[in-house]
Length: 233
Length: 312
Image: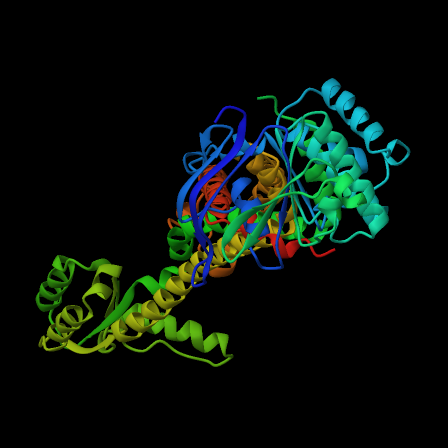
């Protein structure tokens, strides 16, 4: 259990009046993992991301996040867990009337970082995502790829222990998608744990050293990743 | 935890600038609530004052027979004076009746010569208090007993008319109390709807705060500051309106003829209205904060329900 960021055991989930989304699902994510959640639309990828981020409850089973029982966090402490994660969405979920740097600074502002610390971290992130020249630009004036970079910047600025990305390349062309994945890969090489949910089966092949979970028929199946050298053969 | 007041204030100001009409409507709504509250609380005394004095008493006139003896008249007068509802008695002799007729005739430009006052019957004008109107049947029975007295020639009773006038004014009073109370409630409901609207407009932001790990207090903070700014603007405005209304009452008093009467003394002073306004303000603050708490507890902006709002 040491170094385990997410641990799920006998997880059951179903929406009111609907079929089971997960039945007896077991999995774990260790620190430093780069995990791809693959599955067709409606298979439950987003639901799993929401469960891990505490946006969605589950019917039964145990989910431990950073060693803490997620169910116990629901009673008023879930925000403490959310401070340790960064989330990236397909539709970016940025405040369009705020500038790039203001959007990136949001996790720091809401969790009470000092002004100096906010400026320092935001500048570092802007350099990392290569958007320094657009720091004052309102997000509504950015392209889709740039918006996703801002969303990624917002997800990493507070040094989370886990980054969750739900279809992060869903609205992007291949060129931008590769750029985003390259960025994720760079974070992972620095020890960052990532879970990326996608329906696009090509994405795991663009990155090295990833784990792949397939969601099929309400269960999670671990898939052996294809290595770069194997792909070359 | 450090609270980023500057950022929250900046967001609230942005909100106000973006939708000034909604903000102004909410301020107006709180202002009218703060005016309607004190008026509802004092509406009973205000409406009592609006009932003119003549609608609160009945007049009965008892005419003597020409041949009624002094002893009989004295007996009847004693009976009248001993009645619980008798407010005042005015005796008018035959001579005074003739003088009054002469005065009236002159005012119409006609000549009139005084006749023999001894053959003109006098009368008694009895003013019955409001208590009589509470029991009109008993009161009428008393008047009927007077009419049956051998010394009495005839009786004119204004009781039925007075009861009708009082009922009519009572209906107006109740309508006005109901209206002010309804107005107060409508304003509260409007406030609730405006808050709901404002929550939907702020849904993305609150959703993001929630997702980024903001504490429950931080999520509510912008709503609190927004509400406080509305109340700070609305309350002085409501005090000004109450002040103007208080001044306007003098015209109302004159119109209904209750100026400088016991009834006009019952009209609430500006100090009373100010006190009640503070009470209403406390109630409005309580209502606003209950709405905010309710909105968050009822998940008007729940993260798991907010997927559809990110359409752009």
